[in-house]
Length: 298
Image (cartoon, rainbow, N blue to C red; front, top):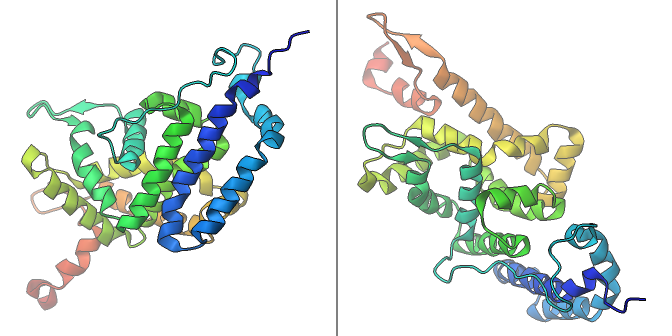
């Protein structure tokens, strides 16, 4: 009879590293919100580690790679698989996660005149524009969560990240956190859309790239479009509220509704003198147009 430890036990140290990552991810939130004292938090983590042997069977049931019959991830006894090693120069893991979503959902397109490749060319502006949506402590907490996702997946390769997340429901909830929080920043959709476009334009000026409304629509749909699946049914919406807070699903639905109406407005052309057709004025611009002296005289 073999005396080798079961496969899942050979990943015991990996599981301990995941708990440590969990602790690092939560610490900025507690620091920012003060929901628990540091002593309470440290004691809770210590208790978790003290009872670690009793949760090994549970870990075995959820570790698909270890319980599969054709496991290729188990190394020699006592050796845990390597965790994701972040580049020491990289600090912004929220943008890294969001850019990975863009690259898996948007094919590259090159401007034949300038040679600029979209969406790659907008990444520097996207980084600054996304972080500007949040207070510093909020961004720090989201960044720690994104780093935790990469640590637990063991990779930051674009396609591999989303392939693995498709089979990790619990981890996918954590991975969706930055996307949900960023989308909620567009509650006042038209004003915040214009602010985002203006900020992107300023950041990309040196690249001679004009960030237009159609680019915003493409990015918005690529970043947040998959969240629609989470608000389609009543049960889905209840799950969203449980994971991200009461009222989140309703807020997301309202934002999607505003986005869809804006996209339809932009797509519906109007006829102007001379027989030409031109896009309708943006919704947020109509009050401005109506406030002009010429408009008042009409």
